[in-house]
Length: 65
Image 1 (cartoon, one colour):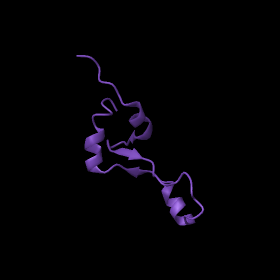
Image 2 (cartoon, helix red, strand yellow):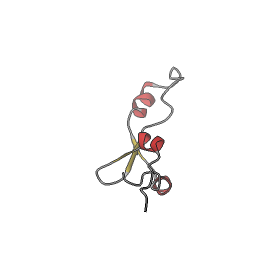
Image 3 (cartoon, one colour):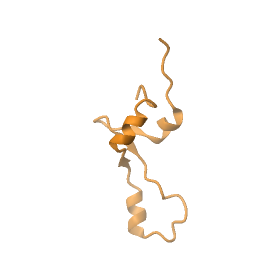
Image 4 (tube, helix red, strand yellow):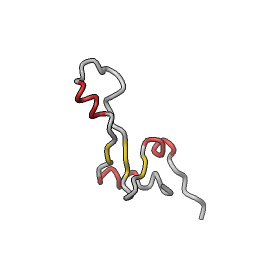
């Protein structure tokens, strides 16, 4: 049986936590930042966990992670 290929775009965007969950960066923080409040921009810096429904979809994209 050949090795499964990792989807490299997914591997660059998601990291595995110690407990096995997937961590992702926030969106909406690249441009048009002038109209967003400081509090909102500060909260967008933090990483978030992937929801369970999305995790099921991403599981096959990261076979060895």
